[in-house]
Image 1 (cartoon, rainbow, N blue to C red):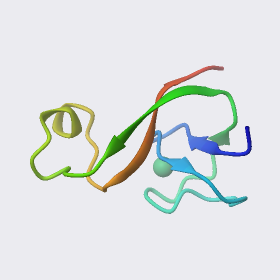
Image 2 (image 1 turned 90 degrees about the vertical axis):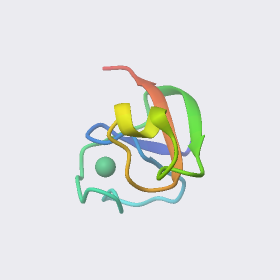
Image 3 (image 1 turned 120 degrees about the horizontal axis):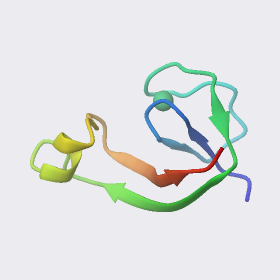
Length: 64
Ligand SMILES: [Zn+2]
């Protein structure tokens, strides 16, 4: 899998980037599984409880 997930906010970065575009963290990992697509963070309860503020694709779990 080429995609990387940010360990800090779980945002999935599809290109070979060295930094998370959402939170600016460079702590990225390829060891993630499952993903959720956030389309309406303003209205989504899941986004609120997950502290997600930007629409996009997020990993469900990140393995260490
Ligand atoms: Zn991030």
